[in-house]
Amino acid sequence: MGSIPDLPMNIMSEIISRLPVRSLLRFKLVCKTWYALITDSHFISKHLHDYNSYKHQIIFKSLTTSILTDCISLYNDETSGGLVGLHTPFLVSEYNLVGSCHGLICLFPSYGSGFPISLWNPATREFRILPNHRQAIRDGIRHRNILGFGFDPASGDYKVVAILREIPFSVDCTVRVLVWRMSRDCWDEVDSAFLNQKLGSVTRYRISAYMPVIMEGILYWVAHYFSSPTERFIVVVYFDLRDEKFGQISIPHLDESVCFTRLVEFKGCLALCAQTCDFRPDKGHKQFDIWVKDKHDASWTKHFSIVPSPTLVIPIGCYRNSLVVQETAGDHPKLLLHDPDAREQWKELPIPDVSCGCRYEVFSYVESLVPLRLRATKKWST
Image (cartoon, rainbow, N blue to C red; front, side):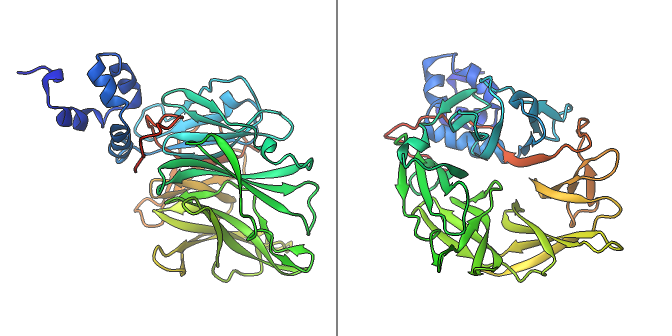
C-alpha cells in the first residue's frame, strides 16, 4: 500500500479539504509539497466549500460585557461542549462585531476607545489592523460609523464599507461613504448621492446601526425613508459590493403598531423580522412576523409568526434552518432555536451562562484558511 504522500495531488486535495483548519496548519509543516498545496488559493476556496458544506457554526457576542475575550463564543451542535470561548490575540475592550464572511471577522471599537477597525481569522489566529478610515476624509467633523463587511464575488476581493453620519445628528446632515479593499489596503470615498437625497432640508434616508446582512456580495440594512419632514416608513437599503452602488428594496406593508424590525438570512433568503406591539395596559402583547423575500423578484411572503406567551422572545439571528431567539423575561432567560417546519419546532441551546438582562448578537461562522492579505495574481472564488 502506498503512503499518503504518494497519492496523486488531486486525490490528496479531495481528502484533506474536509479536515479542520487546525489539522491543516500542522500539515503545512510536513513538506514543501503539502505547504504549497494548503496555501494555494484554489485549495483554500475548495476547503472553504468542502469542509463547511456539512459544518454549521454560529458566534455569540454578548452585548453586556466589555471584555472581548469573555464575550465572544463559538457554538456548533456537533461538539459535546456546545459553547467554546474564542480568545483574541489582542488585549482591548469595547469592541463591536461588524460581521463575518468566509471565516474572517470584522471588528470595530466602541466610540472613544481609539482603536482602529480590524480583521481576524480565529481559525488561523491571523489578525490585521486596517488603516484609520477617519484620516481618509479629515473634514474636522465627528461622525457616527455604520459599517458592513463582505466579499465581492466579481473581483474576488474583501471589502469594508463605512457609512459616516455627522454627529450631532440632524435631519439635514450629510452622509459620506468610504470603502476599504483588501487588495489595495486603503480607503476610497465612493458616491453617496443616493443616501444624501433631500426632501427640502431633510435627508430622506436614515440607516439602522444594526449589523447588516451579507448575501451574494450585497449588504442589506433596515432604514427609514422620510416621505415628508414628519412622516417616514421602513425600507431596506442595500450596497452592492460589485459595482459599489446603493439601492432600495420595498418591504411588505406593515401594521402601524410595528415597533421593531431586523433583517436576518433565513434558509438562504433575506428575511425581515417585524415586531408588533400593543402598549395598552390590558394588553402588553408583542408578536414577531417573519417575512421572507423571494429570491427572484421583489415579493415578500409572511412565512410564520411568533406569539410569545407568557415570556417575550426576540429573534437575533439564524442557525442552520432555524431562527435563533432569546427570551428576555423570567428569572432564567434562554436562547432557543425555532423552526416552524420541523417536527420539534422549539429547541433550547445548551448555553448555561445566559443571565437575566444579558443580550446577545449572533451571526454565522465558518472555519477557513482565507489569509488576511490577498496575492496580487490570484482571484478568490466561492
